[in-house]
Length: 172
Ligand SMILES: [Cu+2]
Image (cartoon, rainbow, N blue to C red; front, side, top):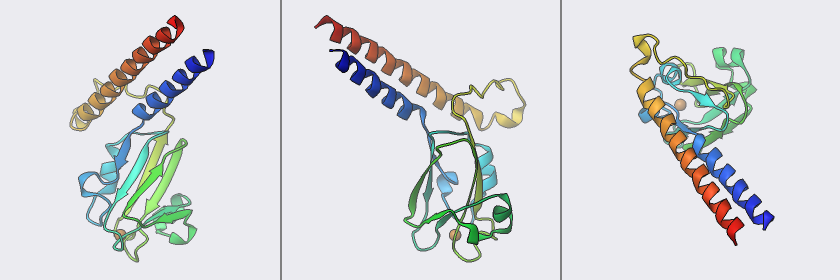
């Protein structure tokens, strides 16, 4: 009996966590390509712990190499690679706060700007009290805030379902 309640709660916690996590397609609709402006793409995103990056590209033309730090990132030193991927649909989980550096492993591409720096925030802090700020953020923030609003609605719905499920379990 109590075990079942526990199971339901664990299940709900998992669903809720999954619902709060976002997937970021690196480079937006252009994807992981030489022509994409990654720094402007990254500045319009909010990366939180639990989110995922997805690098989409033509396998064989490009690859994804994670670099060890700022200096390797600046100088495109691929020798410090922490790991590399080349499937054309590479998923990277952002599992802790901090800065991560990615570049293309194809010769010359990093130097042409095919690299991106991602700063991951700890997911728990409510980090968007800047609604009345300058007009520069107005182009990108509405989509982001409506997306997080949807996440909240979904989480509320899941919690409600959990409460109903739990009370049903107690009735039997
Ligand atoms: Cu490349």
